[in-house]
Length: 170
Image 1 (spheres, rainbow, N blue to C red):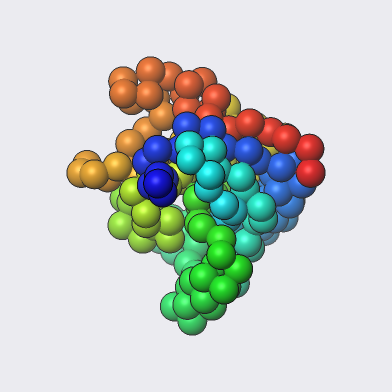
Image 2 (cartoon, helix red, strand yellow):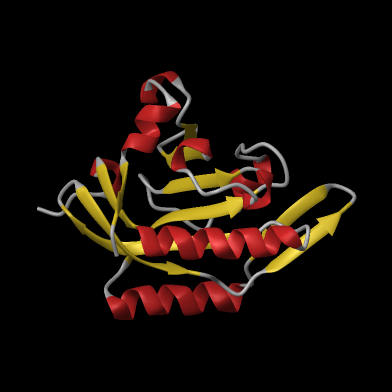
């Protein structure tokens, strides 16, 4: 029986994926822009094994309204084909913010990870500090009202949300 992403209770996250994600976000942040990465892998029951980080082609946007990161349509199509051909599934999107971490209205409306149960992590301070899941704002896609914060009552605490992610060697 195939379990949907909503059934994932444990994520195996290789340190190399975490390190590459952080390096990309920090490098983009040094230019004063938000960065984006995606985590993909395979699911067996309630465990999701992240196999790789995908750094999509992206454009940092700076305007009077603030900052954003945009992934063009052809790149989204390329990623979807790659995931399909590789038999991988998208689990999470990770992006940085210039100051504190939160899910903005733009983050809600233009998410790339759109399967129920997917995660969205927002890294604070342009990823200047060492990467820590506990420092990220962690959200999970649910039926309406859509993205739910790791700090909302149904998750008990941010620590409980972060506990889903297990850093493994690799």
